[in-house]
Amino acid sequence: MSSSVSIPRLVIAAPSSGSGKTTVATGLMAAFAARGLAVSPHKVGPDYIDPGYHALASGRVGRNLDAYLCGPELVAPLFLHGAQGCDIAVVEGVMGMFDGAAGEGELASTAHVAKLLRAPVVLVVDASSQSRSVAALVHGFASWDPEVRVGGVILNKVASDRHEALLREALESAGVPVFGVLRRVAQVDTPSRHLGLVPVAERRGDAVDSVAAMAAQVAQGCDLEALARLARGAGALPCAAWDAAEVLGAAPPDPHRPEGPRPQTPDGLVVAVAGGPAFTFSYAEHSELLTAAGAEVVTFDPLHDEQLPDGTAGLVIGGGFPEVYAAELSANEPLRKAVSALAETGAPVAAECAGLLYLCRELDGRPMCGVLDASARMEETLTLGYRDAVAVSDSSLAVAGTRMRGHEFHRTVVEPGAGDAAAWGVRVPRRRLEGFVERGVHASYLHTHWASQPGVARRFVERCRTS
Image (cartoon, rainbow, N blue to C red; front, top):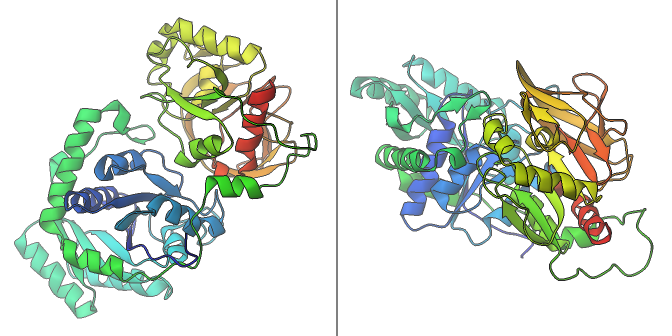
């Protein structure tokens, strides 16, 4: 890969959440793809759900760009990795354009990522309750940070032709191009639940219809040619694409691994990764790192598969909505027993959030895998936010003292919150121990992005070889 790469790209931002970023970004991806373009879909921040809609729209894996979890220095390389071979990239922002990690200034905001990508921004404005004032709002966002280039706007939830004329007149006087005008369309709405939109995997047919409606609305209401020209104006990025094999080769050695040649991967070393509707939260780079470290990654569905994949030497259970499927997960007793038996052997098991709940004795009174002597239940309070964490115990993922950044996002509680050997020590919202390290199991509420610490994947696979 050249050290200077140019991918046409746009960042879709908004003044606030609820303005229509997902509708516009997903619709643009699908509309460009319908024109025969290879579209690279991206999402700013740790959100797992929007990338599922992006993947449906573009036919490619939706990828996250998170300057907090991965560090600003990895945003452009991870972007180029995802966008290789594509004609255009669309990056959906997060929250309001300048909203980032709490107390960290611009870090991880849409504006920050746009600057790191040297990408023009299209501002999606909910115009439902304003007319001339839209010019003042857009002017403020366009001028707040001179390093952020707002190329134009798309007006959303416009009521009528008269309303559109007033908005266009105001923005013309402000010198800001209007790339599109969207009316409110009910069928574009996607259902939400306690943690946001309902994932694609849970409503595949309806999700296809929703994405098609978004694409039709954007294609009809937006100037796709002008947006493509704006995207092509983004310059080259002065870095190379991230590569899982390369970063694993450069990762610092595990101080607990004996010196000498690294053992070769035996044929059939399988790392099973939970998927299906109950476990939809994962970063594509995790599987890519596991593969680069020598594992064969095989996905299974804990709702339906009664056994782990043949040859399973390690298990990764990411996030999702096990509380929604507690009855079905509990009813699959053969798989619960298989997971418990694997953990008993000391095989590496990495579980995050939903995976943590699945490993407990019970979830909302229903039996789970019983790997951990803990119980889980739903609650009203939302736990949400970025976390700075340090590994408290040596585990199949990391040696004690390893520092990582993570993200919590759940409405459940596990009691106790930590085992005798905790997984992490975290400082926010208060100093506490969190998670469990038992035998080969590392289970925690914390979602982490392994690209920030690629040695995690290498250590996990090496433990699979030796357990």
